Length: 524
Picture (cartoon, rainbow, N blue to C red):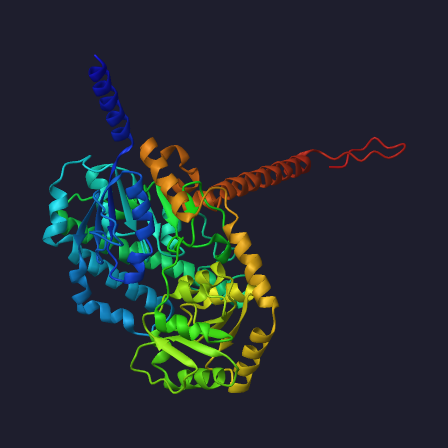
């Protein structure tokens, strides 16, 4: 009898456990390592919650890592897209503004098309509806063609971005995108816009919407028709705008603050590790023997310009600091005061107490890592791509910016001298970090996991749907109301004028009698 009771209890426990387990399809289609590693802590945490996870990824890592066997994680390898020649278009460092965005859209769309037509991905379309309980898609860059899987399996859709969301992503969730109050992160200004900046922001917003809805969405729809071999394939914008949750891996305070709907969650620092890996022996020895260290991490676009490179290097060598430079090995190290490598753990070096300054050309991850470890930033501005986050650093006085192509060497040196010698930048970095980490529950990974489980538990978030996202521009701008009011006011004026005119004409038609004293004559 006791064995029967034990068996019943075990069966009930298994039923309870399975009721919390869900099958999740995670799609990470972008062939950049940074877009893959940033989500690994989230996938690991979902694995700990006993979810069964299938990951479409260009960088498979979950077979067995750090001694952990991920039994509930299945990976579909998409790494073949790294061999596509079209990726070379993204390496054009001279692209700016609209051309840069059009290139991103074109390249990503073609990559997604190749991935959707690959045999391994086509096998997913053969699975029945309901096979998965949730689909999570990386929307970095734009809403993805991969959203089609949420439609195919008829399950809730969670969008996640590596950084601040593109304007069309915010619009899909009903988040207001006012060009004056909160301009796009692609524009080189953030607040107190002057007239020319306001004009520029409005024109950019008009162009972006026109391009996205007249070119990008129709092209996506044609691809889906071809992939599904269906003439009546679903509209990709309708799928995107019906998504249930948006997770933005960016600190809200570092973006242009905007009103957001409850289904938009800013995270920030989701990639940051709770425990840092030990530094390499050579780097640790270099740091331990140094008094003060400046860490330099710049993009390939900066290093390709030899003049910029030498200007910065010459200026840094004038200071009594040692340099750790994240750079390819083909650059020659001319001094023993510099440690150079392209395999530096950025968080590890920024967390080291000897590191006093981070020299970078921007990029969200670089800035967020600096703030997380309270290291002041010396920003090198030479392209509009990263200017937004550099301006946020200057806004909170956690660092200074040098427009490297216009500042002469003395100006660069003076700015470096100010930031190295003054403690106010370090103090402000500490204050900014305290503002960022003051969150209601847990860290970014825990908050993201809670919201994903919330979507699964409730079968979506349609009960949190904002009426704003269904409004047409006519209703949003209240043009119909204004037109009705103007029409009503004009009707009142017309009626009043008509009545006055009728009274005037009627009064003219009446006989006029002029009566004088002692006279009975009538004057017409």
